[in-house]
Image (cartoon, rainbow over the protein chains, first blue to last red):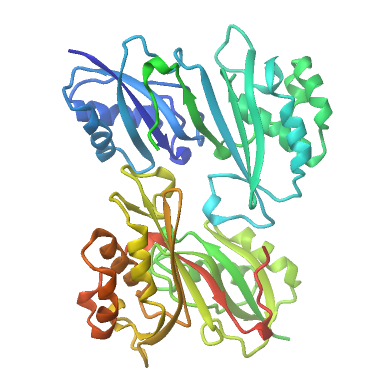
Length: 255
Length: 255
């Protein structure tokens, strides 16, 4: 009997060419596919909840696959972890309804971008957070961030990738907080265009540096002109931090 | 004119065979010596505040050297960082009195050991904290930790290394705290025997697992018998976190 299994995983993306399997490069999906195929002793096809870019991390990522294996559910995370490298970790596994799909069933996703302010670099944040050497006016950046919340055409803060039907998305939250010298930009939405989170952060960095005013954001969004927003912020500060599904799927991360 | 320069640095020790320069292995001291010799365009001899082992980290480490270079003090950290790999960072530099010595002038040192409790490993704590999979009774471990405070012969919690005149040290603080799933063991003393911090932590882990009672610690210390204490905890959870000198040297880390 086939079961559909969903897993929650986390990974440090530094050593990977992103989520998606490609010829001649090491990807999270590729490494996970090998580990699962070995563990279940059958060919496993893994579907992920999104394509994270090279260097992007995930504190919560959801993937699913079908298997005919009878391995008890509570041994799946343990078994996969024993075959995975230390920078990928499976937290838990669930049996899900056959209609579950990591991308199509998803109703909300959250990315968090970490920036640290310091005159010198921090060895422990290398590849983990963006180093920002200049003064950072939190209130000014917060005022700008608030303008991204709502339903907008986000064409001015995305990169061209796979064609999409619509460039309209709803951002539920775009919060900027600071703890010690670490600034977190937390963005949740019903979906993200390609590079949207990083382009929003790049734009907020231009607000921090004074190049863009908080009040300019609504116009930048309306213009649908990519060149008016900030550059795409570097990959290594970005983390997928939450993926939400309708309750009926029973996918709930244990603390 | 020669100046004596003290620098405060931090480093991720994962990729190094410890602080001390040795033939055929990459050390913090070796990499720093090359960087400083290039920057100052003269042969620089660097003295460190202690020999951290392979894989041990430092959030604050103090080193000093003499130079005839006229590079302004406020350019030294910047200049060294531009020549150092990203896992070593110089935070600041000071001109110090000629009698200053990173080891002999030091009046207090602090190490912090990080342990995280989780059923599965955390990719972001790989090489940075010890993964502990079992229940951890904080109060029990705290009770044991308190027994290390004071002036004792610490022979039962050290490894044999370079001969020392005395195995008596004064531990000022041995605090165990928990934040989310991260346990910190913070130990400060007027000096540490070889592997003393790691052997204290290894003993506390035996207390956590029930192998040793908190009330056994005074006896274990009195016995001066290494075999009665716990194993030396792995290097990768250990960080040098503070080094204190008499105020007259003016070595104060900026926040």
